[in-house]
Amino acid sequence: MNASLSFDFCNIKVFDFYIIVTFNEGVTVTPKMNNTLIHVTETHFDDQPFVYISNRINSYAVNPEIYLDTAKIKNLKGLAIVSTNYQAKVNARIEKMFFSKPFETFSNIDDAICWGQMLISR
Image (tube, rainbow, N blue to C red; front, side, top):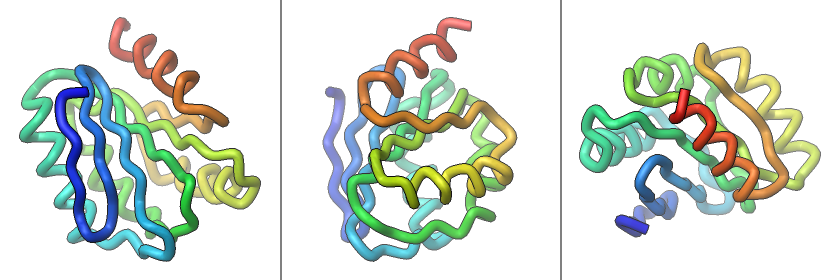
């Protein structure tokens, strides 16, 4: 792990080619929060390709329009949602419609990381 960051709304772990974000319980993800995440990726990855992994162990709300801005990050190769919760997976299907890059749902972090490695190696 290259960095571990904590904000009042989430925890972030930065690795060589991916970032794992765990939002706090009950949060509603706002554009301001999203801008913070974008800043973190710009700081740690610069122009290096990376994958965003959302570790959905908590229940929180996301305005799917946020993905329109997130997809504009040129070195972001894909987004993975990790959850075993049925509702989180249903929500992810809706969110996927707002994201123009590869977007997949997984039941565990390891599968998401493997998928990310595959995207980066393309």
